[in-house]
Amino acid sequence: MADQKNVLVFSAHAADFVWRAGGAIALYASRGYRVRILCLSFGERGESQGAWKQPGMTIDKVKEIRRAESIRAAGILGAEIRFFDSGDYPIVTTEETVQAIVEEYRALQPEFVLTHSFKDPYNPDHETANRVSLETRVYSQALGYPAVGKPLNAPPVFLFEPHQPEQCEFKPQVLLDVTPVWETKHKSMESMEAQGHLWQYYTDLGKRRGTQAVRNGGPKDIKYAEAFQRVYPQVTSELS
Image (cartoon, rainbow, N blue to C red; front, side):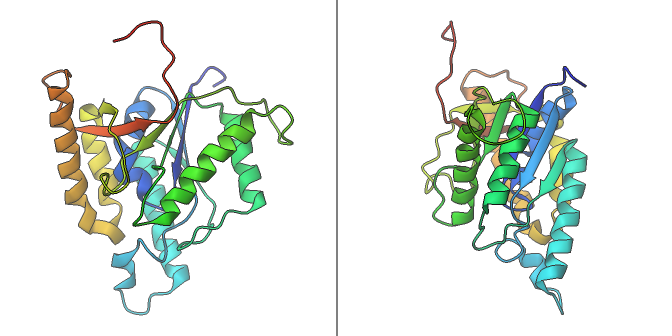
C-alpha cells in the first residue's frame, strides 16, 4: 500500500533480531507497519552451537538450518527478511552489499531503524552491522549518491539491547512495552533451535525490563519490555 508505514531492522546474524527486537517487530507489524529485516549473516560459525553439535554438520548445512529458522521466526513476527550471506566471524560487506542496502533504505523510506549497539567486545560482527547500518543511512540521504530511489530523510535510529549491555556501554533510554505481543515473540524465539540456551535468558530480560518500565512511570500492567538507545536527538516541541 502506498500509504503504509515501514520499519527497517538490521540483524548481524540469523537470530539477533529475534532476541533483541522481536517484541518491537511484532508490535509494529500488528499495527499495520511493513517491517523488513536485513540479515547480514546466517551466524554459521559463531552463533550456531546447537547445529554444530549434530554429527556430520557442515557450513552449508548450518546455513540451511539458520535460514529456515530465521524465515520461520520472521513469519511469526509478521516481518519480511532478506539475507546477504556476508560471511561470519567476520562479516565482510562488499560494495555490492552497501549499494543494495542504500537502495533498501530509499525504497522503504522507514519511519525508524533498529540496529546493533556501537560496541560489543564479545562479537565484532555486531559492531560491523551497526557501522554499515549507519553509514548506508547517511549515503541514502545524499542527493549525489548514485542509487535508485528518492533520497532518504532522517529516520530516527534505535539501538537494541546487546547480550551483555554493561560491557557494550549500552544505555537503556527507551523502554518499549511489548506485553501485548510477548507470546508472539516467545514463539519466534522457540524457532531458534540452534540457540535454545538463550530462550530463558531473554524471557528473564523481558520481565526485568518490564519491571523497570513500570518503575519509570509506565502503566502497572506492563509485564514485558525491550530496551533501546537513541542514536540521534529527539526533535520535539514538548518535554514529556
